[in-house]
Length: 265
Image (cartoon, rainbow, N blue to C red; front, top):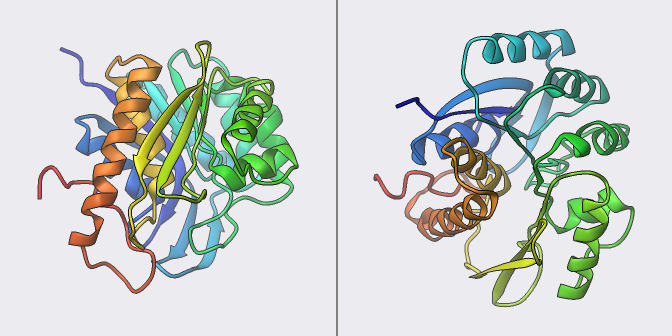
C-alpha cells in the first residue's frame, strides 16, 4: 500500500510551535509522511518574532522541484510565504499539480508580528487563490483579504465566505477562533450548503500554531484520500483535542503550542 505523503511549504518557527515544525508534527500524528519546503527562517518563541530571513525564491523553487520530482505527494499545505517573489515561484511550480492544495493565508503571528509583506497580499489573492482546493483564513485574515472589517456574526461570516469563494478557491474554511462567546464556530463553504463546525471555546493561552496545525491536518487527511468535508471535520476534532491537552505541556512564557501528540504521550 502506498505511503500517504503531504508537503508543507511554509516558514520555520525556531520555537517549534507553529510553521513547518507544527505542520510536520500534525502530519506525523495523523499517520502521514511529511515533506517540507522552507520559505523563511524566523527567530521566534512563544512571545515574539524577533527576526525573519527570507529564503531566496530560486532556492524555494529548487526545494519544490526536488520534492515533487521524487515523492508521490498527494496534498500540499501552503503557509507562510512572506513575499511576492516567493508567492510567484510557488504558483508557477504548483500550476500543474494534480493533488489537493490547502492554502492557509498566514499574515500575522500569534504574537502580533507580521509574517506576510503588505505588498504580497494582492499577489496571494491573484496567483494562489485560483489554485487552492481550500483556503483557511481566520476572521482577521479574511477581513484583510477582502478589505473590510472582521465578521461579527454568522451572517457576515457567510457573506465573507461567499466573497472569498468568488476569488477562485474550490472551498473556504472561515475559522472563528478570534470571535467571542463560549462556542467557537468555523464555517466550511464548498459546493454544498455552508457547514458550521462548532466546539466549546477552551480557556487556555496555549494556542500557538493552531492555524498551521489545522491546515496541515486537513492536508494530511486529504493525502490519505478523505473527502474535503471529512478531512475538515476530522481536523477540526483533532485540533480541539490538541488544544484541550495543551495545558499538560509547559512550554515558554507566552502563547504555548497545542499538544500535537496528545494521543501518544
